[in-house]
Every structure is written in structure tokens, then in C-alpha cells.
Length: 637
Figure (spheres, helix red, strand yellow):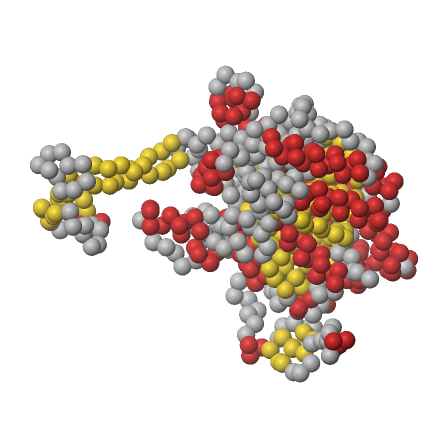
């Protein structure tokens, strides 16, 4: 009998806003929400984006005017829409009009068989090149003659052809929520997202630590690219070219595993299993699979799973662009038969399953918290859904390592077969939907639609609802499936499957006999969907599909296993959890947005551990780490 991994909390940040309490989801479907929900969403985003403040129960503009919820929507609604989701890259990241690069040239002697110039003495190379001669030397400046060809790098600025991305809401800085010290952007996002997920649970993390053994917690997260901005590997790798000193933190904080390591130490005080698993664009699901298996097998009772990606840098964008993978201004002008680049609507760059020309890069950090089914009842945790299975398969032999292949047919078919066993054929055929990878490349629209259509045919599914959130929040690489999952959880709260707003017309080469590719939000009601499939196709043959069960299906499974009385008891104990979670929601809805960060606190040393032949007691942790009393290989001894 396997334990059931249940989602009890989630949080994060991407171009649509904060994930917890469905803010990110509500931004996607904001025009379908009722007036109260819509206004509250605008208010929370306005606070996050520093457009308004909150003081003594009143919202204030920065010029001191008192504002109602309606005022905020009317005054800032257009600004919020224009400065969230996919849009032109903000100068706070870099100026797309003047991206700096070095042009290498060779200067040959022309006059007196030498190249002459003046420079500061402290800038002289050491040792001095053999062809350089110092002709004049004073206290600060020297005159140089070079009798050979001289290679120089000339700093220049050029316009980047990829001008759009899905960056966090304008004005929001995750480093403002805790005392960050030159942390890379991806690490800052990790701290914010993991903290958001933990606080969204409504159960103090210390209560979790006290209830389970220190080694019964797993943390799995990672990024694909690593931390490639100035404070991480990006600054390290360019330091000698730019003449800057390497900082002691750039290498260590630049690693892909920092998304796990940082939160394990400074957010979670974790002593359990940890890991960072990369599977290209499927990395979130690769980490999720490890967590699901840990809980199913009883290795862990709690698992925190996530990813963070901050890839909006000129170098990463140019790398993907050189592959032909990104939508850029030239391609969109040609695709839409526009007159010039100035007429490009960047918000429409990502067009899954339509006539498209490439994906749009995005930044995101997403984390979820899983409990086993017994712990959910013991602690009165919220039940947001369950993840009974994640399937991963490679592509086998293929011509190009970056091209899609056979593996995704296997992952999706396995997930659908698993759903059929759990919820039945009728529910599978009529009450499920797909969160497609939907990268917005011409090759993906053909190959993924064929995967979906083929599996639908095999299981006799007709009009299978399919959506793709990359049309809103871009492609955040390792975090992409986290974006898909966060958007899925909102469906069970508000009842709308987000449509694909850029899907004006399905492309002719899309396989669409059995699919309902959603051009508009689909109203399914809060209990109209029993399960969703999170699908991911990553470079290198990294395919994954996760099956996610709705809260109502999860509760029925819990009642079947644990009985009606246990569920009634849980309903009572869950009231306090909901109150605590709502208190956190109210605080961040009032602008009090602080991340958990325990740097330098409660440090555990070797002298704080009491080791016996049967267990280890760690100071500050109530439960012991106990050793196995029997071997799983007894039959072989």
C-alpha cells in the first residue's frame, strides 16, 4: 500500500504575480472573475508592484490619496496589465536597445612603424608585452609605442532582436522581502517562492519539524541554466573579459543546486534528503518524481519541491536565438506580414498551437509542499490536490538531440492509464484536461499535438480540453511545469480553465481530431474537473507527465482509506489551519510581504548531536533520527 502525496501548500512568483492563494492564476483569468475577485487581484498586484501602499486599514497612492478597491482598479488596472505577463524587456534587467558587447579588432602600425597611445600607469598589463615600449613615464600616465600588430576589444552597443520576455511584475524585487546580500536573482526568487509556499500552508513550519523526524523531510529543486546573472556564474565567467574581480560567492551561489541548498538551510532547516535534478524544460517534474516516490515508499512524510529560473540575460537570450528557438522581431514581422518592427505587439509573442515562430523566455520560481495522507489528517492540513504519479521517459535514438522524440508518448499514455484506474473511464473522458507544454515553436505544435491526439484516440477521449500557460507567462525552462501546476490548482478554486489568448486560429499542421484547443477560458465549475495532466517536453529527450487529482477526488480517496470519522476530525482540525493561512494571505494582501530567512540562526554543530546505537538526537529537533531494526535483504542472509 503506497502513501498518497497530497499538496498542502504552494507558492512562487512569475510574470503573472505571486502563486499562493491563486493570485497568479487570477491574473490569467482576470476578465472572467466577478467584480470583487477582480478588484482584489488588482489590489494585491498594485501592492506588489509598489503602485500603492497600505497603512492603518487604508490603501494610499504615493501622492497620499486614499484609494478604494474600485479606485485602484480604475487608476492602475491598465498599468498592471501592461506590466505583467509577456512584454518588452524592462531596462531594470537590461536595455534591449543598447546591449553591450566587445568587438575585436587588430590595429597595425602605420606611422614610424608603431602604434602610439597614452594610458594610466595602474592599468598597464603585467608582465608588459614584449612589443610594448614605454616612451614617457610620469606619476600617473605613460606613453606607449607598440611595434607589432595590436589586438584590441572595442566596447560597442547594439540592439537585440529578441525584445520581449515574461519577467516578474514591474517593480517587484524578491530581494526586498529578506536581507539578501548580492544573491543572484534566481536565488532571491527561490527564497521568496519557498517561503511563500511554506507560509501558505497555514501550519507553522516549526510544528511540522516537531511532528516528523528530521530525516523524514525531502527537498528537491533546481534550475536548468544556473544563476547566470552578474551575482552568479554570469559575473564569474565574464570577470576576466570585463576586468572585474571575481567575488567569493559568484561560483558557489551560481550552481543549479542553490535552488535546493539555500532553502534547505535558510528557509526549512532541513536535515532530510535533498537533491537537484535537471531534465531541461521538464526539471520541475523530474524533481517532483523523486518527491512523490519518497512519500509513496515512506522514505519521507514531507516533501518540498520546486525550481527557479532567472534566464532573462542578453547572453542566454542570444544563445537560444542563435538556435532559432525564440520568437524575435524579424520573425514576427514576417509571420504577421507587418510593415516594421515598431508595430510588433510583444504581448502576443507566444502562440501555442497557432502559426508561430518560437518561444518566449520567462523567469519563474515555483514550490509546492507535499504531505503523506496520514500526516494530512494528523496536522489538519489543507487539501489542494494530490499527485499519485509522475512518469519520465527518454526519446531513444533520434537525429537531433534538441528535437522531440518518442518519450512523450510513453509518459502521457502512462499518466492517462493511471488516471483511468483511479477515477474511472467516464471521468477520464469527460472530466480531465491537459496543461500542454505548448512552447510556441512550429515543431512543438506538430509533435505535441500528435502526442495528445494519439493518446486521446487510444483512450477514446473526444474534445479533450487543452491549454498552455506559456501564452501568458512564457517559457521559464526548469520552472515551466511549476507554472502549469500553479495555474491548474486555481481551476479547482475558481472553475475556469485558462484559454490560450493568442490562439486566433489553430495552425493547419496541428493534429486536432480529438482535442479542444481552448481559445477562450472554459467554465467548468469548481467541481467539473477530476484530474489534470501536466505535460512537459524538454531539450535532450527529457519528457515527463504528472497526474494531478482534484481536491474532491483526493478527499474521497482519503475517506475510503481512513474512514468517515477521520475525515470529520480533519474537517474540525483544518479550521485552525485555514484561519492561519488566511492570516498570512491578509498580511501579504496588505503589503506585509516578508520571506522566511534564518541565516545564522539555530546552527547545528556536531556537538549538538547525541548518537546511540539505535538513533540520533539533534538539539532543537523534538523527534529522533532512528535506525532501521531489520534489513530489507534478510531473505538473502
